[in-house]
Length: 78
Image (tube, rainbow, N blue to C red; front, side, top):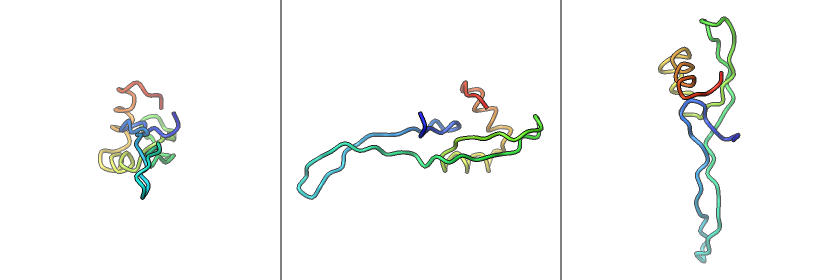
């Protein structure tokens, strides 16, 4: 599951592309997932996280310590 945010849980959504003649074909909406490296002071190491754009803003707001705690509470590995 490559297009998946570790913090928010955002993952691909599916829908239809509709042409001018109204023919429909399947398409996929991927979240804007980036790999980001943060310093985790409590463990004295860097952690690399796969976060959506909203997830990056959340880490900036609440801090990396609380974000990692949330990821671990959801059962994710850091």
